[in-house]
Amino acid sequence: MRNDVVILGGGVGGTLLANLVAKEVGEQVRITLVDSTGIHVYQPGFLYVAVGQEKPSALKRAEARLLRREIHLVVDCATFVDPAAKKVVLKSGHTLRYDELVIATGSRTVMAEVPGAMGAHDFYTLEGAIRLHKSLEGFEGGTIVIDVAGIPYKCPPAPVEFAFLLDDYLRARGIREKTQVKLLSPLNRAFTIEATSKLVQPILAERDIELTGFFNVESVDPIAKTVTSMEGETVEYDLLVLVPPHRGQKVIEDSRLGDERGWVPVDKNTLKHAAFDNIWAIGDATSIPISKSGSVAHYEANVVAAEIVAAAKGEAPPLHVYDGKVMCFLETGQGRATTISFDYDHPPVSPTPARRWHWAKALFNKTYWHTVPLGRLP
Ligand SMILES: Cc1cc2nc3c(=O)[nH]c(=O)nc-3n(C[C@H](O)[C@H](O)[C@H](O)COP(=O)(O)OP(=O)(O)OC[C@H]3O[C@@H](n4cnc5c(N)ncnc54)[C@H](O)[C@@H]3O)c2cc1C
Image (cartoon, rainbow, N blue to C red):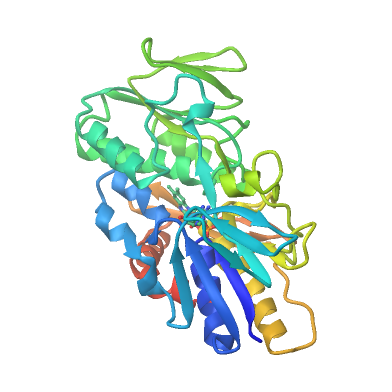
Protein backbone atom coordinates (compact mmCIF):
# COMPACT_ATOMS: atom_id res chain seq x y z
CA MET A 1 0.00 0.00 0.00
CA ARG A 2 1.22 3.50 -0.82
CA ASN A 3 2.09 5.88 2.01
CA ASP A 4 0.02 9.05 2.37
CA VAL A 5 2.08 12.22 2.54
CA VAL A 6 -0.06 15.20 3.47
CA ILE A 7 1.32 18.74 3.21
CA LEU A 8 -0.54 21.62 4.84
CA GLY A 9 0.07 24.93 3.06
CA GLY A 10 0.84 25.76 -0.55
CA GLY A 11 3.26 28.63 -0.03
CA VAL A 12 6.97 28.60 -0.88
CA GLY A 13 7.85 25.69 1.39
CA GLY A 14 4.83 23.43 0.86
CA THR A 15 4.75 23.81 -2.92
CA LEU A 16 8.46 23.18 -3.37
CA LEU A 17 8.41 20.20 -1.01
CA ALA A 18 5.42 18.62 -2.78
CA ASN A 19 7.09 19.01 -6.19
CA LEU A 20 10.41 17.59 -4.98
CA VAL A 21 8.77 14.52 -3.45
CA ALA A 22 6.51 14.02 -6.49
CA LYS A 23 9.44 14.23 -8.89
CA GLU A 24 11.33 11.46 -7.11
CA VAL A 25 8.65 9.14 -5.76
CA GLY A 26 5.37 10.43 -7.18
CA GLU A 27 4.34 6.92 -8.19
CA GLN A 28 5.28 5.31 -4.86
CA VAL A 29 3.54 7.66 -2.39
CA ARG A 30 0.22 9.50 -2.46
CA ILE A 31 0.86 13.23 -2.08
CA THR A 32 -1.92 15.56 -1.01
CA LEU A 33 -1.38 19.29 -0.59
CA VAL A 34 -4.03 21.25 1.30
CA ASP A 35 -4.18 25.00 0.82
CA SER A 36 -6.88 27.27 2.17
CA THR A 37 -6.98 29.60 -0.83
CA GLY A 38 -5.61 27.63 -3.79
CA ILE A 39 -3.76 30.81 -4.77
CA HIS A 40 0.02 31.04 -4.40
CA VAL A 41 1.14 34.51 -3.40
CA TYR A 42 4.68 35.87 -3.81
CA GLN A 43 4.97 37.97 -0.66
CA PRO A 44 8.35 39.70 -1.22
CA GLY A 45 6.57 41.62 -3.99
CA PHE A 46 4.32 43.39 -1.44
CA LEU A 47 7.10 45.93 -0.77
CA TYR A 48 7.10 46.99 -4.41
CA VAL A 49 3.30 47.12 -4.65
CA ALA A 50 3.29 49.54 -1.70
CA VAL A 51 5.58 51.98 -3.53
CA GLY A 52 3.95 51.51 -6.93
CA GLN A 53 6.75 49.48 -8.53
CA GLU A 54 4.78 46.24 -9.01
CA LYS A 55 1.30 45.24 -10.10
CA PRO A 56 -0.64 43.15 -7.55
CA SER A 57 -1.71 40.72 -10.28
CA ALA A 58 1.95 39.80 -10.92
CA LEU A 59 2.19 38.31 -7.41
CA LYS A 60 -0.52 35.64 -7.67
CA ARG A 61 -0.77 32.30 -9.48
CA ALA A 62 -3.21 29.42 -9.20
CA GLU A 63 -1.51 26.83 -6.98
CA ALA A 64 -2.67 24.05 -9.32
CA ARG A 65 -0.48 25.51 -12.09
CA LEU A 66 2.64 25.18 -9.93
CA LEU A 67 2.16 21.57 -8.88
CA ARG A 68 3.28 18.42 -10.67
CA ARG A 69 0.47 16.20 -11.93
CA GLU A 70 1.13 13.48 -9.31
CA ILE A 71 0.04 15.85 -6.50
CA HIS A 72 -3.56 15.99 -5.37
CA LEU A 73 -4.48 19.59 -4.47
CA VAL A 74 -7.27 20.11 -1.95
CA VAL A 75 -8.45 23.70 -1.64
CA ASP A 76 -9.75 23.74 1.91
CA CYS A 77 -8.67 24.98 5.32
CA ALA A 78 -7.12 22.52 7.78
CA THR A 79 -8.85 23.13 11.11
CA PHE A 80 -7.55 20.31 13.29
CA VAL A 81 -4.74 17.77 13.33
CA ASP A 82 -5.19 14.61 15.37
CA PRO A 83 -1.73 13.02 15.67
CA ALA A 84 -3.06 9.97 17.53
CA ALA A 85 -5.48 9.11 14.71
CA LYS A 86 -3.06 10.49 12.04
CA LYS A 87 -5.86 12.60 10.62
CA VAL A 88 -6.37 16.16 9.45
CA VAL A 89 -9.84 17.65 9.71
CA LEU A 90 -10.81 20.20 7.06
CA LYS A 91 -13.23 23.11 7.25
CA SER A 92 -15.51 21.36 4.73
CA GLY A 93 -15.91 18.50 7.22
CA HIS A 94 -13.77 16.08 5.23
CA THR A 95 -10.84 14.33 6.88
CA LEU A 96 -7.51 13.22 5.45
CA ARG A 97 -5.46 10.31 6.73
CA TYR A 98 -1.70 10.65 6.70
CA ASP A 99 1.36 8.54 7.31
CA GLU A 100 3.64 11.56 7.09
CA LEU A 101 2.50 15.12 7.69
CA VAL A 102 4.36 18.31 6.79
CA ILE A 103 3.15 21.57 8.29
CA ALA A 104 3.96 24.49 5.98
CA THR A 105 1.16 26.84 6.95
CA GLY A 106 3.33 29.94 7.38
CA SER A 107 2.31 32.67 9.80
CA ARG A 108 -0.55 35.13 10.20
CA THR A 109 -0.58 38.76 11.18
CA VAL A 110 -2.73 39.97 14.06
CA MET A 111 -3.03 43.75 13.97
CA ALA A 112 -5.78 43.51 16.62
CA GLU A 113 -3.14 42.64 19.24
CA VAL A 114 -2.07 46.30 19.28
CA PRO A 115 -4.85 48.40 20.85
CA GLY A 116 -6.01 51.14 18.47
CA ALA A 117 -4.01 49.83 15.50
CA MET A 118 -6.79 48.35 13.38
CA GLY A 119 -6.74 51.28 10.93
CA ALA A 120 -2.94 51.34 10.61
CA HIS A 121 -1.29 50.56 7.30
CA ASP A 122 0.88 47.53 6.63
CA PHE A 123 2.65 45.81 3.75
CA TYR A 124 2.33 42.30 5.16
CA THR A 125 -0.70 41.32 3.09
CA LEU A 126 -1.41 42.07 -0.56
CA GLU A 127 -4.55 44.00 0.42
CA GLY A 128 -2.50 45.98 2.97
CA ALA A 129 0.16 46.85 0.38
CA ILE A 130 -2.50 48.01 -2.15
CA ARG A 131 -4.20 50.18 0.47
CA LEU A 132 -0.87 51.62 1.61
CA HIS A 133 0.00 52.53 -1.97
CA LYS A 134 -3.33 54.35 -2.38
CA SER A 135 -2.68 56.35 0.79
CA LEU A 136 0.88 57.18 -0.29
CA GLU A 137 -0.43 58.45 -3.62
CA GLY A 138 -2.65 60.90 -1.73
CA PHE A 139 0.11 61.88 0.73
CA GLU A 140 1.43 65.41 0.34
CA GLY A 141 3.89 65.67 3.24
CA GLY A 142 4.08 65.21 7.01
CA THR A 143 5.42 62.41 9.21
CA ILE A 144 5.45 58.77 8.15
CA VAL A 145 6.16 56.35 10.99
CA ILE A 146 7.22 52.74 10.32
CA ASP A 147 6.86 50.80 13.53
CA VAL A 148 7.82 47.17 14.18
CA ALA A 149 5.18 45.86 16.58
CA GLY A 150 6.79 42.61 17.65
CA ILE A 151 9.38 39.95 16.93
CA PRO A 152 9.38 37.54 15.15
CA TYR A 153 7.94 38.88 11.92
CA LYS A 154 8.39 37.78 8.31
CA CYS A 155 11.56 38.86 6.55
CA PRO A 156 13.58 40.70 9.22
CA PRO A 157 15.07 43.30 6.80
CA ALA A 158 11.69 44.19 5.20
CA PRO A 159 10.89 47.27 7.37
CA VAL A 160 14.34 48.73 6.63
CA GLU A 161 13.92 47.96 2.93
CA PHE A 162 10.53 49.63 3.00
CA ALA A 163 12.06 52.74 4.61
CA PHE A 164 14.63 52.98 1.79
CA LEU A 165 12.08 52.33 -0.97
CA LEU A 166 9.77 54.90 0.63
CA ASP A 167 12.61 57.43 0.62
CA ASP A 168 13.08 56.81 -3.13
CA TYR A 169 9.32 57.08 -3.71
CA LEU A 170 9.02 60.40 -1.85
CA ARG A 171 12.03 61.84 -3.70
CA ALA A 172 10.57 60.80 -7.04
CA ARG A 173 7.33 62.56 -6.12
CA GLY A 174 9.22 65.68 -5.01
CA ILE A 175 7.81 65.60 -1.46
CA ARG A 176 10.79 64.20 0.47
CA GLU A 177 11.70 67.67 1.80
CA LYS A 178 8.21 67.99 3.26
CA THR A 179 8.24 64.51 4.83
CA GLN A 180 9.85 63.10 7.95
CA VAL A 181 10.42 59.34 7.89
CA LYS A 182 10.80 57.60 11.25
CA LEU A 183 11.62 53.94 11.86
CA LEU A 184 10.77 52.59 15.33
CA SER A 185 12.38 49.32 16.38
CA PRO A 186 11.87 47.25 19.53
CA LEU A 187 15.60 46.45 19.45
CA ASN A 188 18.59 48.71 20.04
CA ARG A 189 19.27 48.64 16.29
CA ALA A 190 17.53 48.65 12.90
CA PHE A 191 16.59 44.95 12.95
CA THR A 192 17.51 41.56 14.35
CA ILE A 193 20.74 40.95 12.43
CA GLU A 194 23.43 43.00 14.15
CA ALA A 195 26.15 43.01 11.48
CA THR A 196 23.75 44.13 8.73
CA SER A 197 22.14 46.69 11.04
CA LYS A 198 25.58 48.22 11.52
CA LEU A 199 25.99 48.37 7.75
CA VAL A 200 22.61 50.00 7.04
CA GLN A 201 22.32 52.40 9.97
CA PRO A 202 24.72 55.00 8.48
CA ILE A 203 22.76 54.80 5.21
CA LEU A 204 19.51 55.40 7.09
CA ALA A 205 21.12 58.49 8.67
CA GLU A 206 22.42 59.68 5.27
CA ARG A 207 18.89 59.47 3.85
CA ASP A 208 17.50 61.34 6.86
CA ILE A 209 15.50 58.35 8.10
CA GLU A 210 15.32 58.67 11.87
CA LEU A 211 15.85 55.41 13.75
CA THR A 212 14.53 55.06 17.32
CA GLY A 213 15.48 51.89 19.19
CA PHE A 214 13.91 50.23 22.23
CA PHE A 215 10.45 51.28 21.10
CA ASN A 216 8.06 48.46 22.04
CA VAL A 217 4.66 49.60 20.89
CA GLU A 218 1.94 49.52 23.51
CA SER A 219 -0.93 51.27 21.72
CA VAL A 220 -1.98 53.53 18.89
CA ASP A 221 -4.32 56.50 19.26
CA PRO A 222 -5.83 56.91 15.78
CA ILE A 223 -7.65 60.16 16.76
CA ALA A 224 -4.60 61.93 18.20
CA LYS A 225 -2.45 60.14 15.57
CA THR A 226 0.14 58.98 18.06
CA VAL A 227 1.86 55.71 18.82
CA THR A 228 3.03 55.04 22.37
CA SER A 229 5.68 52.60 23.56
CA MET A 230 5.87 50.48 26.70
CA GLU A 231 8.95 52.56 27.52
CA GLY A 232 6.64 55.60 27.81
CA GLU A 233 7.59 57.41 24.60
CA THR A 234 4.91 58.91 22.32
CA VAL A 235 5.50 59.62 18.62
CA GLU A 236 3.17 61.62 16.36
CA TYR A 237 2.38 60.51 12.83
CA ASP A 238 0.40 61.53 9.79
CA LEU A 239 0.66 58.08 8.23
CA LEU A 240 1.40 54.99 10.29
CA VAL A 241 2.83 51.80 8.79
CA LEU A 242 2.86 49.01 11.34
CA VAL A 243 4.64 45.69 11.03
CA PRO A 244 1.87 43.73 12.76
CA PRO A 245 2.48 41.11 15.44
CA HIS A 246 2.76 37.63 13.92
CA ARG A 247 1.69 34.23 15.19
CA GLY A 248 1.28 30.69 13.90
CA GLN A 249 -1.96 29.53 12.27
CA LYS A 250 -5.07 28.81 14.29
CA VAL A 251 -5.01 25.12 13.27
CA ILE A 252 -1.69 24.76 15.13
CA GLU A 253 -3.07 26.42 18.26
CA ASP A 254 -6.36 24.49 18.14
CA SER A 255 -4.52 21.18 17.68
CA ARG A 256 -2.07 22.02 20.49
CA LEU A 257 0.81 21.30 18.15
CA GLY A 258 2.64 24.54 18.88
CA ASP A 259 3.79 26.90 21.59
CA GLU A 260 1.70 29.72 23.08
CA ARG A 261 2.09 31.79 19.86
CA GLY A 262 1.26 28.86 17.59
CA TRP A 263 4.83 28.20 16.37
CA VAL A 264 5.57 24.51 15.85
CA PRO A 265 8.47 23.19 17.95
CA VAL A 266 10.82 21.17 15.74
CA ASP A 267 14.39 19.96 15.93
CA LYS A 268 16.44 22.74 14.34
CA ASN A 269 18.32 20.22 12.14
CA THR A 270 15.85 17.45 11.32
CA LEU A 271 12.76 19.72 11.36
CA LYS A 272 10.82 16.90 13.02
CA HIS A 273 8.13 17.82 15.53
CA ALA A 274 9.39 17.65 19.11
CA ALA A 275 6.68 15.13 20.04
CA PHE A 276 5.74 13.28 16.83
CA ASP A 277 8.11 11.34 14.64
CA ASN A 278 5.93 11.48 11.53
CA ILE A 279 5.25 15.23 11.60
CA TRP A 280 7.61 17.87 10.22
CA ALA A 281 7.27 21.62 10.02
CA ILE A 282 9.07 23.98 7.65
CA GLY A 283 9.20 27.69 6.88
CA ASP A 284 7.53 30.40 8.91
CA ALA A 285 5.44 27.85 10.86
CA THR A 286 8.34 26.62 13.02
CA SER A 287 9.56 27.97 16.35
CA ILE A 288 13.22 27.85 15.26
CA PRO A 289 14.73 31.23 16.17
CA ILE A 290 15.85 31.95 12.63
CA SER A 291 14.63 34.41 9.94
CA LYS A 292 11.07 33.78 8.83
CA SER A 293 11.95 33.99 5.18
CA GLY A 294 11.26 32.32 1.88
CA SER A 295 14.88 31.25 1.66
CA VAL A 296 14.61 29.32 4.93
CA ALA A 297 11.37 27.65 3.75
CA HIS A 298 13.17 26.78 0.50
CA TYR A 299 16.24 25.18 2.13
CA GLU A 300 14.13 23.40 4.73
CA ALA A 301 11.80 21.98 2.05
CA ASN A 302 14.83 20.38 0.39
CA VAL A 303 15.78 18.65 3.65
CA VAL A 304 12.35 17.25 4.51
CA ALA A 305 11.68 16.23 0.91
CA ALA A 306 14.96 14.29 0.85
CA GLU A 307 13.96 12.48 4.07
CA ILE A 308 10.51 11.55 2.74
CA VAL A 309 12.00 10.40 -0.57
CA ALA A 310 14.65 8.30 1.18
CA ALA A 311 12.00 6.64 3.33
CA ALA A 312 9.79 5.93 0.30
CA LYS A 313 12.72 4.35 -1.52
CA GLY A 314 13.48 2.27 1.54
CA GLU A 315 16.92 3.84 1.87
CA ALA A 316 18.67 3.65 5.20
CA PRO A 317 17.93 6.61 7.39
CA PRO A 318 19.28 9.24 8.03
CA LEU A 319 20.03 11.91 7.59
CA HIS A 320 19.46 15.05 5.69
CA VAL A 321 19.81 18.03 8.00
CA TYR A 322 19.07 21.71 7.83
CA ASP A 323 22.23 23.66 8.62
CA GLY A 324 20.51 26.98 9.34
CA LYS A 325 21.27 28.43 5.91
CA VAL A 326 19.69 31.81 5.18
CA MET A 327 20.25 34.02 2.14
CA CYS A 328 18.30 37.25 1.70
CA PHE A 329 18.56 40.46 -0.28
CA LEU A 330 18.14 43.87 1.33
CA GLU A 331 17.27 46.88 -0.84
CA THR A 332 19.11 49.98 0.34
CA GLY A 333 17.39 52.30 -2.14
CA GLN A 334 18.75 54.39 -4.99
CA GLY A 335 19.13 51.24 -7.09
CA ARG A 336 21.42 49.41 -4.67
CA ALA A 337 21.07 46.39 -2.40
CA THR A 338 23.11 44.11 -0.20
CA THR A 339 22.69 40.47 0.79
CA ILE A 340 22.62 38.64 4.12
CA SER A 341 24.03 35.11 4.31
CA PHE A 342 24.63 32.91 7.31
CA ASP A 343 24.02 29.50 8.83
CA TYR A 344 24.16 27.94 12.29
CA ASP A 345 27.97 27.89 12.22
CA HIS A 346 28.73 31.11 10.36
CA PRO A 347 27.69 34.61 11.43
CA PRO A 348 25.82 36.91 9.03
CA VAL A 349 27.84 38.55 6.29
CA SER A 350 26.66 41.48 4.13
CA PRO A 351 28.67 43.06 1.31
CA THR A 352 28.76 46.80 0.62
CA PRO A 353 25.50 47.73 -1.12
CA ALA A 354 25.89 47.66 -4.90
CA ARG A 355 23.79 47.87 -8.04
CA ARG A 356 24.42 44.23 -8.90
CA TRP A 357 22.60 43.01 -5.78
CA HIS A 358 19.61 45.18 -6.61
CA TRP A 359 19.48 43.67 -10.10
CA ALA A 360 19.99 40.17 -8.69
CA LYS A 361 16.98 40.68 -6.41
CA ALA A 362 14.89 42.06 -9.29
CA LEU A 363 15.84 39.04 -11.43
CA PHE A 364 15.05 36.63 -8.60
CA ASN A 365 11.64 38.26 -8.11
CA LYS A 366 10.80 38.13 -11.82
CA THR A 367 11.90 34.53 -12.33
CA TYR A 368 10.43 33.16 -9.06
CA TRP A 369 7.47 31.48 -10.77
CA HIS A 370 9.79 29.42 -12.97
CA THR A 371 12.38 28.54 -10.34
CA VAL A 372 11.81 28.15 -6.58
CA PRO A 373 8.39 26.46 -6.30
CA LEU A 374 9.23 24.14 -9.19
CA GLY A 375 12.47 23.00 -7.59
CA ARG A 376 14.74 24.52 -10.23
CA LEU A 377 17.09 26.19 -7.74
CA PRO A 378 19.21 24.18 -5.29
C1 LIG B 1 6.74 42.25 2.68
C2 LIG B 1 7.46 40.95 2.69
C3 LIG B 1 8.72 40.86 2.12
C4 LIG B 1 9.40 39.65 2.13
N1 LIG B 1 10.64 39.59 1.52
C5 LIG B 1 11.31 38.42 1.52
C6 LIG B 1 12.57 38.32 0.86
O1 LIG B 1 13.06 39.28 0.25
N2 LIG B 1 13.22 37.12 0.92
C7 LIG B 1 12.70 36.05 1.57
O2 LIG B 1 13.34 34.99 1.58
N3 LIG B 1 11.50 36.11 2.20
C8 LIG B 1 10.79 37.27 2.19
N4 LIG B 1 9.56 37.34 2.80
C9 LIG B 1 9.10 36.22 3.64
C10 LIG B 1 8.49 35.08 2.85
O3 LIG B 1 7.49 35.53 1.98
C11 LIG B 1 7.93 34.06 3.83
O4 LIG B 1 8.87 33.80 4.82
C12 LIG B 1 7.60 32.77 3.10
O5 LIG B 1 6.51 32.99 2.24
C13 LIG B 1 7.28 31.65 4.08
O6 LIG B 1 6.98 30.50 3.36
P1 LIG B 1 6.04 29.37 3.98
O7 LIG B 1 5.93 28.33 2.93
O8 LIG B 1 6.52 29.00 5.31
O9 LIG B 1 4.64 30.10 4.20
P2 LIG B 1 3.74 30.90 3.18
O10 LIG B 1 4.48 31.19 1.92
O11 LIG B 1 3.17 32.05 3.94
O12 LIG B 1 2.58 29.87 2.82
C14 LIG B 1 1.68 29.39 3.77
C15 LIG B 1 0.51 28.78 3.01
O13 LIG B 1 -0.29 28.05 3.93
C16 LIG B 1 -1.65 28.27 3.64
N5 LIG B 1 -2.39 28.01 4.87
C17 LIG B 1 -2.34 28.72 6.03
N6 LIG B 1 -3.14 28.16 6.96
C18 LIG B 1 -3.70 27.08 6.37
C19 LIG B 1 -4.61 26.11 6.83
N7 LIG B 1 -5.11 26.14 8.07
N8 LIG B 1 -4.99 25.13 5.96
C20 LIG B 1 -4.50 25.09 4.69
N9 LIG B 1 -3.63 26.00 4.22
C21 LIG B 1 -3.23 26.98 5.05
C22 LIG B 1 -1.71 29.69 3.13
O14 LIG B 1 -2.83 29.89 2.31
C23 LIG B 1 -0.40 29.81 2.35
O15 LIG B 1 -0.60 29.46 0.99
C24 LIG B 1 8.82 38.52 2.75
C25 LIG B 1 7.55 38.61 3.31
C26 LIG B 1 6.86 39.80 3.28
C27 LIG B 1 5.48 39.87 3.86
